[in-house]
Length: 116
Length: 110
Image (tube, rainbow over all chains, first blue to last red; front, side):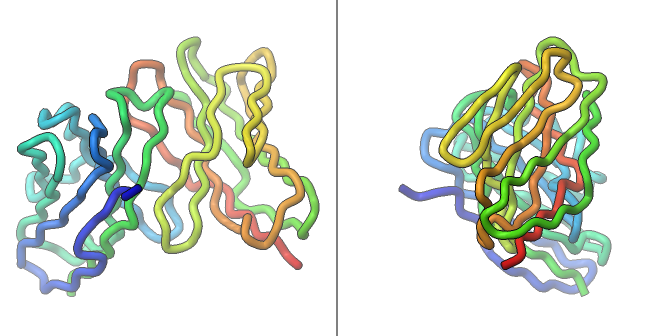
């Protein structure tokens, strides 16, 4: 079966441009998470959805970052006015249920963002 | 949230058993212990989860002592393909934000 997919896999952009990263979770999964992962570090939580509702966005670094999941399936993470420090791997994960304690999260391959 | 501490790196050889211990001294009653594996250029992959005592699946075993202040991931007879980063997570029951640390980089040598 299809796993979590993300697009694009690689994105190179110039500083100041806006970027939109897409995540297509496993069909039927309720929860969707966005993470950012720097080289040599573990994934850092950004935000989380149950169905279409954004439950927590406390991990978003600043107001240039936003995310949506309008129909409870595909999600988009948007970074406005990109800066070089935004360069990282952005990962999406989905899980069947609403809580992370007993449910496996399935991660996508990630989008490598490079801001020049 | 319970903070976890695990070795930054470990080395092993093919065919050996590898044990990676994670300490989580301030684990709470309703916290679960979860381990993920991450290969280079891939996203993390769930390995095993437990609450207490021992859990075993086709990939690994997880040993949790009675006080639950630590846990040990055991990989039997590792192969080169087990070279990866292993993350220990403690997630609050009913929570939704798993916190990944730096993980343990395991290198398996021929």
